[in-house]
Image (cartoon, rainbow, N blue to C red; front, side, top):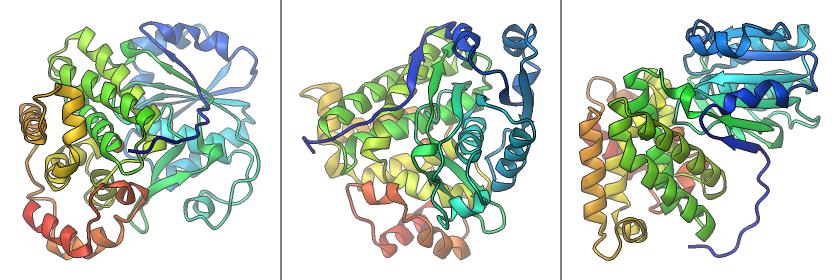
Length: 365
Ligand SMILES: [Fe+2]
């Protein structure tokens, strides 16, 4: 594991129950504010509580499906027409990623495609961006990238760069309390995957390892109870997600995330659902690199086998399928192989050849 690193951690991070109450005070310096949220949140009790007495936010509602370039373009147009000075996203990873991209592109020339396909580099500064997550999963509230899809090409990838960061993350676990059970399961498995992939990544260092393993512990020990509605457990999963997301932008992830993007975009499957299915299969491939994580979590009696079997038992309890039967098609293997070579894939401790990936995909049908 690496013992040298340099960090610049940009966002101000505020974590804790009821911390949503600091939002208006923190944004008091901006006259023209834009709120991006999903329809479900806009009709919620918490939306009324936060915004019913306010008339200084331009509210833009987006679909809560995975964000596309078209959704970003429409939201960017709304932000520019209203000449907003700051953006707040309240929602899951999709809503936050749209806000992050719009804040980052607000002052740039060209189209979102130009930056998604790296034809242009953002040169101007972003406008102020604040994120409040309503799910415990992606950690998008602190990561300096956004995951977007181009529906014309089925390409799903990260748009990266300093401008796609966050200025303020307010993580209030109470915002996750109304999350539907399927979302608690899938986003929890995403966060757990991020934690363990970051811990065993070949770019991990001692600092990111510490954060990743604490993230793993909080999520691993609380996700079952969070799914049963235990509020303390939901708070712990929320905190674990945040801590993990502070680590993985520096450590990178692994093959689960490399493969989850093309598979998720091809079959329109939730990211956390795909991560949950792939996790045990990829950890088996990475078995020889699980020793340090197992020892850090269990102590001396920790072994890769124990860690693997307990993660598999958790996935079973959360009713995560063990394979991609009914979704994955053999004729798509080449597309998946061609589009999985992201930064995440490069961080996987075991280098996977095209034929290794083909063999893995074969076993998932
Ligand atoms: Fe993820």
